[in-house]
Length: 271
Image (cartoon, rainbow, N blue to C red; front, side, top):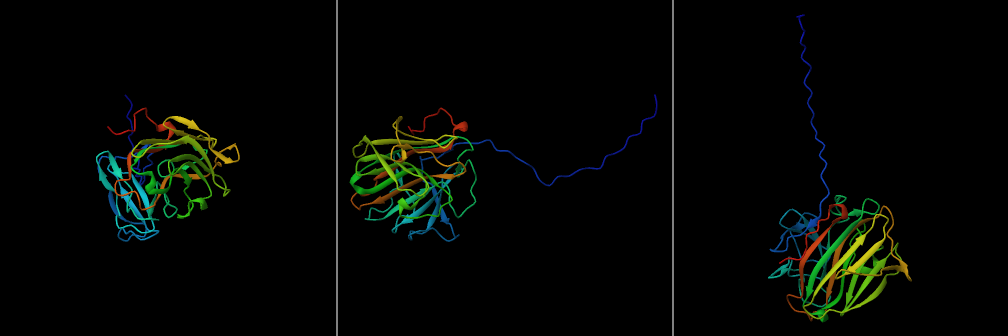
């Protein structure tokens, strides 16, 4: 046997690792209160108008919660069926709750979703104890790169639902045009459960489902709402109080959003 020469190759060390995380659905645990940590500027959480506080849920997901008016209740309240997000029952006080913020980089497919990067959705089940306690409620997607504004119709791009009184409408705003509210003719009594779902297809086409039934949503007239490719949309909720609702008015019982490709068939309603 011929002699073999063995040479040692120099060791190669890498100081970085590329890790590809599979897309996942952000499903919020509502069986206990989230922790309220601090506001976006690093200071302690406050109830001052325009301050955005972070709510951290078990499991690692979080939401940006911006005060409208003032709030003595900085966090949510406990409820036996979920989490009560109402805050103060004072006229013209409210909250906007977002999955992303224009003040932070965020992550595509987790905090916001880019139109054309795969179909995505947001789904919420809630109860509203007293509809007369709310001036305006909205849920769906908005342009996540746009700075917070308490004047909701100033958002340039919105797809979702609006509740005024007991009237539930779909709502579309495209490229800073006038908002188009379309009555679904569905009315839910005080304390009744509502499940709202907003889906955005890869081509930007929007579908709004109420209790699993699809209702039209328009950008102008009767033109179906189609969001622009490249828009970065975040899930959002908004409510403004009349002061007549009292404590325990809005209780979230289930909330999730994510890419359709990561979606499971599991129910989101907490039992």
